[in-house]
Length: 106
Image (cartoon, rainbow, N blue to C red):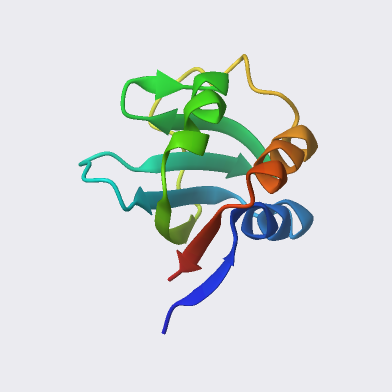
């Protein structure tokens, strides 16, 4: 059963629990891509959506309607270099909280 939650609250929970893994988020808009956020000890170290990565993902997330999110424990980013232009996780949470986006958790 899915539960709806604020996207920022979901990320904050992963941050506070210091989880390592990947959060895959689908959108309502037709797309074969997923928003993918990668965490290490609760910190977001890489973010990708299609050809966008890092802070570019934060610039475009407001234009999408989030649908569902699934966290996969232990998954690492396939890229060797993390997103070097990401703000700290606390800042990302604050930015996403301002968007007031909700997502179904699976």
